[in-house]
Length: 149
Image (spheres, rainbow, N blue to C red):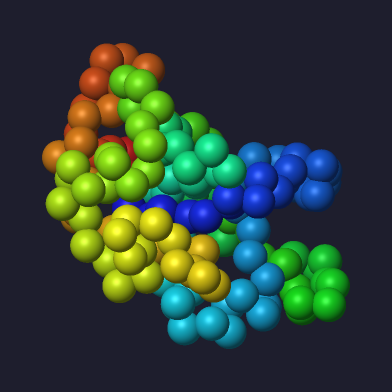
């Protein structure tokens, strides 16, 4: 499972009106930072959670695609992931407190906060036992990570 930082609340629907279900974006310049190397591991069926300016964790998405756009600015090309909501926590949780209670340790999340320049963190199995709400009840994030067949 991947944790993504949109703490500046980028309005993806406005920025990418021609692309549906944009969950997150990142630039070439940001991708050149070793702290964001986990971006390249996000692919179809990956599960991600985007943390916005409130620093709350609540919604989980299943990724449909990871693509490089034709949109270029002073930071290079924009890359986006598109996906759909697949689960939510029973209640929104403050990121630091939630990750601390789950025992998460990640080199780019000191004190379970995003470090400067870090926008992508692969938490691997750290949150697999967390129970989330889905359309037909509840499941664990670990079970959710298994793509539907």
